[in-house]
Every structure is written in structure tokens, then in C-alpha cells.
Length: 221
Figure 1: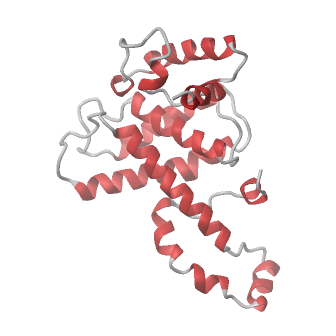
Figure 2 (figure 1 turned 30 degrees about the vertical axis):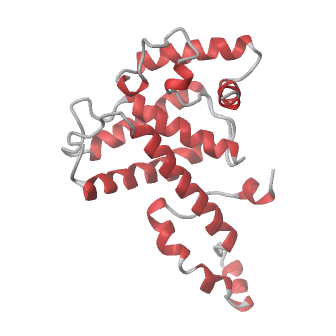
């Protein structure tokens, strides 16, 4: 694992990343005396490496978001309200990256993971206003965003292995629920649990963890 990834923790929110990158060159030219002053006061001087990682993470968060809302009919109106939708996305991805992902630095239990999915849904419901459709911020959408984000972080070596994998059409097609459950229509924890339990059975029967099993599915495509 690269040393950089081993020591990285989020420095910038997705909203801050773009504006802060433009200042990277100036920061990289900071005088040694300034660096010494920061060290003396226990401050972290943001380096170019931090900007590189933050750029990659912000791009991956956008990919995870887009994957979670595709064909999900999340919004009340398909067109329009672009500003409100962008703000909603930024607030949700910031919540995930700054408040949820750090909890996975060390391996956590499945029970804690379920609580984190619930916390994400509660947060989204609290800020949705009148933007979302009748089902609100659906369980299937929440798990896809969080699980896919965690998959990206884990594959980069930034966090421990998460308990679950993203549940989507490809994963469901490997289970007995193929053509029976659509992840974009999952609104209840119990429906998600049914799929996860089946995935756990399939993974463990091959001597694999759930995240590793899911990676093998994608490697065969």
C-alpha cells in the first residue's frame, strides 16, 4: 500500500475541493519558516499530495452519487430544479465523506453499518424539502451510495474492509432474487437484508468475504 494512502484522512469537503485546488501552487511554495511555524503550533500544512487525493475522492464521490440515482426516480420532477438538486447532492456526499466514511478507518460490525445507512437516510430526509418523490430517500439508493463509496475507499487502501458490498442489478442477478427485486425500488431495510443474507451465503460458500466476492463478479465481466 502506498505510504500516502496509508496516512490519508479527509482534509477537504467535496464542496471545498475545487476552490482549494487553485491555491495549491501557492501553498507548495510556502517558505520553510512558515512550515516550521505551522509545525510548532501543531498545524497540518496541506500538501500537493493532499490535493491529489482529494481530487480523486471528489471524482469518486460524484461517480458513486450518479450510480446511486440512475434510473431510481429519486426526484419528484425529472427536469428542472438543477440548483436545488446540486445542493442536495453536495450536502449528502459531504455528510458521507466527512461524517460516515471516517467511521470505517478500522473494521466495524454489520450492526454499526446498518446504523450508518439509517443515519444517511435520516439526514437526507431532514434536508430533502419538496425535492424528492413520494418514497423519499429510498433505502436502495442510500445503500448504493454508501456501499459504493466505501468500496472505492477500501480499494484505494484508505479504510478497512466494509461489511457489505453495493447491491445493484449485477449483484442481484447472481442471487435467487434475479428478476424479483430491483435495487432502485427497495424502500425497506428488510428487503435489503434479504438480499444481503443471500449474498453472504454465496460469498461464504466460496470462502470469501462479501466485498471480495463482489469484486470477483466484476472481474468476470
